[in-house]
Image (spheres, helix red, strand yellow):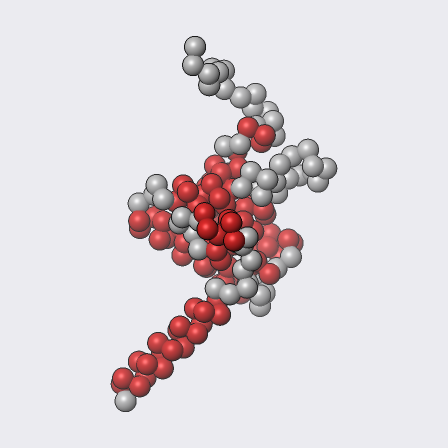
Amino acid sequence: MLASVGAGLLAASTTIAFVRTRGYDVPPEKAARLRNLSPWQYVVLSAVARRIAAPDVDDGSVPTADDVDVAGFLDGYLGNLPPDVRRDFLRLLAFVEHLAPLGCKLASRFTRLGPADQDRVLAALESSREGLLRGGFDGLKAMVFMGYYRDARTWKIPGYAGPFVSAKAT
């Protein structure tokens, strides 16, 4: 009987994992280049980055998180992190996608929400009374901004003129 219960739980968890990671569209050429993120994690991180680094103006003068491929950069960067930190970061992405919306009384996963509801979910994480969630959000936000502001096209936003020393060897 215990073996039957165990087999049932295994089948149920496999089904949940299968359903949970379906419906994420990543172009095949992008999916083939992913090193540390699965396609569904890439989609979640892209959606989070779009909201965290959303331009204040929508006139095309400021690059978006997609324009500078924040999620693609962070996919590579995650490979430089210790395995336990990488594991925690990926768990945070799963939490943001599947559980955090429930805390805002939203019955859909994060990537299926509209921008206003996504902002609401992220704001709830940022202001959470739970220190671990708040700290996780702070780390996520820091990584998104690191991926965003590494691109020279974004430097004018905070008024940064660029490095004083030329990158060319003299």
